[in-house]
Length: 192
Image 1 (tube, one colour):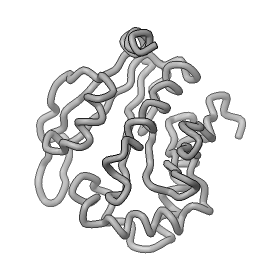
Image 2 (spheres, one colour):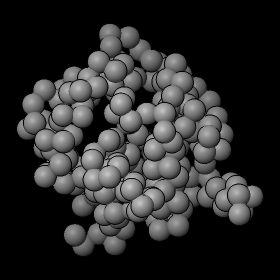
Image 3 (cartoon, helix red, strand yellow):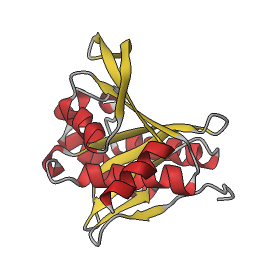
């Protein structure tokens, strides 16, 4: 890859790492989505389109093409070398210095802080390695678990996008959370 912003791996803890999804991960990704299809489809509109392993390969290829074009990337969340979820920069607007952070975790792996740690590593990457100025998170107003991740990380609620997305035969309102580089670094100093 000739992309100067290429991020392929982030080590979060001894047992938790983020790694750019590759086609070799397609079977794992397919099985993880299939195992949580009912749960995940409540919040993610694309879940029902993943009907076979080839669909997972296509999803991964799209993410790799996105990385190649310097417009975001999809990282697998691996705990002890097992794929447990995905965290991504859904797009990167270099001119405006902003991105949107997306994430989901297999239901069996929730409640242990994995997503908060993974998102923290991605936000550090956005501000430190990619030199971005703003990270946004959008999630359904009723998605309390995703909202809790944003709030734990110190994101500020900016507002609600009414009828933001068509999902499960209805429009869903999305809450928008924002973190700026200045706020992130100020909050990190408080921790140290």
